[in-house]
Amino acid sequence: MDPTPRRLFTEAASADVVIESLGSAVTPRTRRILGSLVTHLHAFVKDVQLTDQEWETGIEFLTAAGQKCDAVRQECILLSDVLGVSMLVETINHRAVREATEQTVLGPFHLVVSPERELGADINLTGEGTPCLVTGSVRDMDGRPVPGAAVDVWQSDAKGFYDVQKPGEIPERNLRGLFRTDGQGDFWFRTIVPCHYPIPIDGPVGRLLAAADRHPFRPAHIHFIVEAPGYETVTTHVFDKEDPYLDTDVVFGVKESLIRTFAVTDDEERAVRLGLPNPFREVRFDCVLRPSTRETRAETQP
Ligand code: BEZ
Ligand code: FE
Image (cartoon, rainbow, N blue to C red; front, side):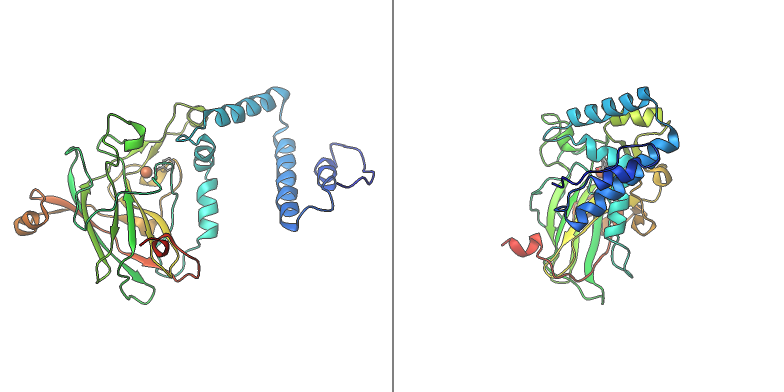
């Protein structure tokens, strides 16, 4: 705490006066973050000439967003998502490097531990939806296979819901799986073709989208987290090239490099061998990991 007398608050010097209130014990990083936040916040209030009523509406909105949060619902992250802040943080911290697989948002529906499944397993526990084969490989930046990489996948069902959104109705761990690449760095599993779905809109973020005249949809996608010892973990999606919401994802998560065709395959022999009806849909998603020095989950698991 700094007891030095300070100049009084004025409209012209508002941000500086608040920044000058920071004590001498503040760390340089906190000073930088708080200083910039106050500078931009004050500039915003001056720019729009915020009224008392609008300030109150904003406070009520933030209060409602906080109150909507619980163990499974994170309205504040959803707010960050629809304002493009989550994707901006993601993009700044994981800038594209050569052919390395690009990152996108994690989203609120990941389970910390997905069920371990054998390569080729069907993660669709309900039998609903259009059967689809997902194949891919995990390689390093020099094209060498990464055997034993953890490939964690999850997606919504044919009606656009994740298991955790409808407990008791959708079987637990439906459309989730944790696979390990084989000796050639390959993985494959059976699932269904994903469909687009709306993010939760029964809270303040839904009201914000309505006020902004924006739709709530995410284009069809399958989530992936790929990790292996000695590499940067990649959190990403594969998107369906045919989806109508590809250009207007409500959370701005689409990257060109992550779009694939979910093609129709007509191959009776493969269908029988893989346990799929013929014809079936198929998508290939190859992941390229960049080297890391940080510890990963795959390293800490047996
Ligand atoms: C998702 O893809 O699961 C998701 C991402 C951000 C917000 C809501 C849902
Ligand atoms: Fe999703």
